[in-house]
Picture 1 (cartoon, rainbow, N blue to C red):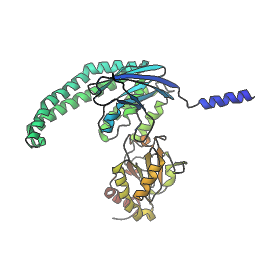
Picture 2: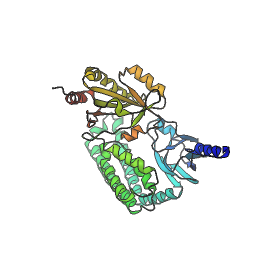
Picture 3: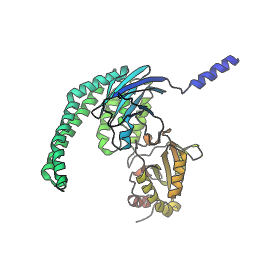
Length: 398
């Protein structure tokens, strides 16, 4: 009996351990941009998560590391030095079990040279895209740089504002229009490629999940096209793959717009208890305030809510704060310093995927104003825009 028990305990202990082990290696042909390579899941923000690996390149620019994770995942590579300066080039790649992914950084661009079976299908696709579109996009950039930069520098030396040069600005706009038109054609080609190769491209599921996290109305057309391909071709493709849950959750979050019902989800109290967020505002008009201690604009908007909260809290209005942090203490210190009078919950290290569920991607925060019935009234973060909506929702006449 004891041996059976011990065997069961051993199996339980194995649950959640890494099931996928992948070797990463590569070369930095250009080390002027940095030598510290960051490898992390594609949906991880290293400002709030320690779920990443760094690999230091040697004198020849070579680097390597091993990744262990619970399932096949889309990962991201970039240089930490570039990231620290706020402008970095990156590339996604698929971590597959018992595979080796080879990466190369050259001319300020990352390239996936080889990988597992699924990744190699993507490499083949990228090679075709390079031939048809990427090389032409790069050429437009080079021509724009060659033609525009010297003129900009000349005007700056003369103490003039380049933006006041009508001919220069028109020419720059022509380059931008040409680039954007071709880029749109490239994206359309990608969607058509995914639709035409469903039984060969499991990578497409991971790419869809990644792109559905892009935030902003400018991505709505892309998301509409992606979800059309997903529901038409991929919805029942490898149904055992849990990436489907991610895609459907992100699709739901994308539809969080005024006039649509708000979602319910869990976050942590400061005591570590999971609670349904709806339990804190049910039956009230509420602002769900997403913020982070490291996000200055978020905290500014949150502080501007305080007068509204104090003014209307006795009339059926409330605020629920949710912070995105790596450590609880950062949230509590910031909340105390800013003087938030409402309950604040937290998502530590993105464990509960609260930002993803709310369509906030890698941003610091955002706000949802909802009425007593749970319908979204606004996604504005401006107090002066929210107040008239709050007054109307709680039944006060203007």
